[in-house]
Image (cartoon, rainbow, N blue to C red; front, side, top):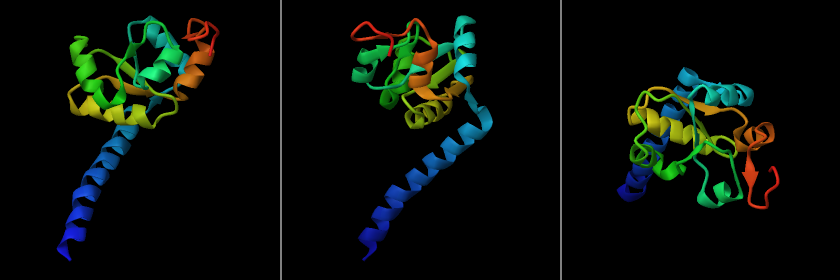
Amino acid sequence: MWRPLMLIVLVAVPLVALLVAVMASVLINGDVPTAEALRQSERGVMLVDVRSHWERDRSAVPGSLHAPWRNVVTHLRRADVGLDQPLIVYCMAGPRARWAATRLQQAGFTEVRELRGGHADLARRSLGSRSADGDAP
């Protein structure tokens, strides 16, 4: 009888904590419109692509750092990114970027924001994006 209840507690509590952290991240930092992200990347703000390897292979924004969402903190530490480096995190549509931004903030990164519109909008607006077949995505 207690096993199903314990399982629910072990699964539900971490999920609720993550949801609260994600919502706090959105309320505190908000998101960045695509045009603003492109302007900021020219001023030293780092674009962090948290999509999978195969997504990145198909289409990437030049100058962005690839750090898959599941290991985003490890990737940024290995790349020697400072905790005070301004970051704009993006994925294809938003959920993975939101999760990655929350993890980065929990790890001590202080200037983390999310890209509104995801990679699809960023690629459309960035003339320098590349795809595997050489065409703009």
